[in-house]
Length: 428
Image 1 (cartoon, rainbow, N blue to C red):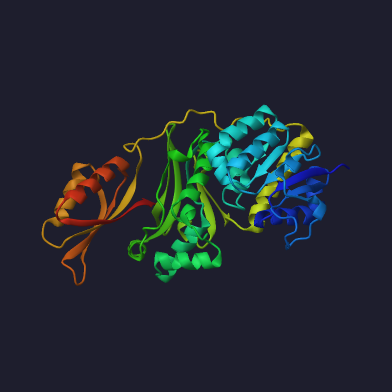
Image 2 (cartoon, rainbow, N blue to C red):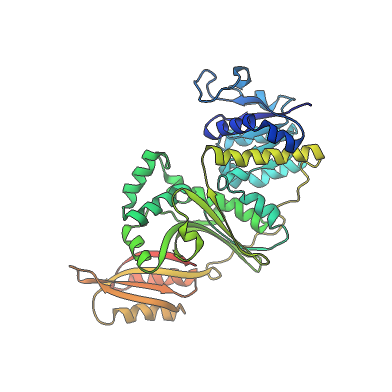
């Protein structure tokens, strides 16, 4: 029986995992797709480099075009990363009728609509399950499992590095800089951690999930982004005292076809399932009009979890190939994108203010909020030892983002408010 030949662009951690699974699970895979799957060619940077996996040297190439132009290659698995040149490779491969499986969140967040349109034109599949949340099958779930439902909210921890940092800060009372250094030493954080800790990685993933969940072409610039670098030990301590955990959450919401997407440190009620997701694990919470609330939890990165998602996509592509239905999936983004304004985006908020410790200050704070029609769930004022200042903690009821922004500007102009120390969205 003629094997299905696969070209692999990249042989790093994830690429190595793909080779291990394809070669180690041949019998299981062949029983699912009806023919053997063979790694035909592999793109590497240096053919002579020592590797921790055995692979035929004749299959290695340092030129991606050897794979893209090979007429015997049926499917290309892209795990090399990058955007510009990678996009060029994928578009040319689609033009040549090759199907694509990719783990590239940056590429799909920025150029997904163009790539998917090219795939439809050429009757090709593009699968990208591994681009979000590693081994959690969240994309397939949104596309297939929720195909008959209307998703109203997607909320998730989709970056393991920041979740590891916030978990250590919560459990050990450690400072942000100290835990970040440890995460870098363990390999959880890059030498330049900006993409992770400033929320950019999570924003790209939420762009992908929102596009699928809301059936509209969401762009990266549509996501309001705030990272965790300003989260302090004090913030974590206050959150725990009030019954919350601080998590970097991606939150996408839809109401009457108006959508909003954000990534931000959020106080999550400890009774909410997502509050107990710790370490480098990911979790995605999905709200559907019919099904209600569901949560998907698992490893968000790593060689084998991510490779498992890639090989699952590979199996799906080959099954479509056998059935002759490649490139016939319905358009995921057929709705007009309508973004909420700040006046339409509503949630609870936590505010921590450093104020003058004297009579009437709390009344002035609450008056500002009342004038903006922001109602309060709870207010706590306490002195700061050794200081003439006090701290006021406010948790609001649902308030729109515009009113909160206006309140913060007003607070900064008051002589009795010395500092707006922290502002967090509250969930759960």
